[in-house]
Image 1: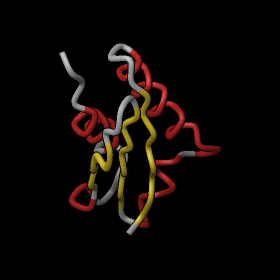
Image 2: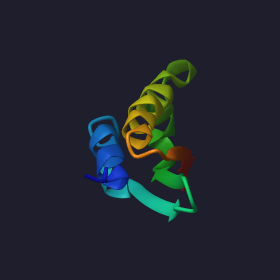
Image 3: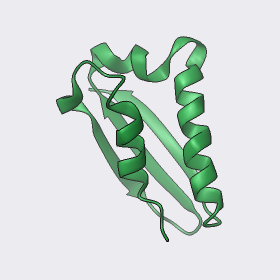
Length: 82
């Protein structure tokens, strides 16, 4: 069963942000064994998503990496604001 990374990341981020309508998750590339995911949030929510010292971003990456490793893939998450 394939992991829906877009849905997984969106479900983790939505409770954290003030502007949930501005959250966009895109899978940019699925070349070979690497999946590149871009997470775009409102500029006001960027600090909430990254967390103090990057703790929330690192925790989110750890969860996504665990799901990807079961499929033998690697995931790269790019977090940015617009």
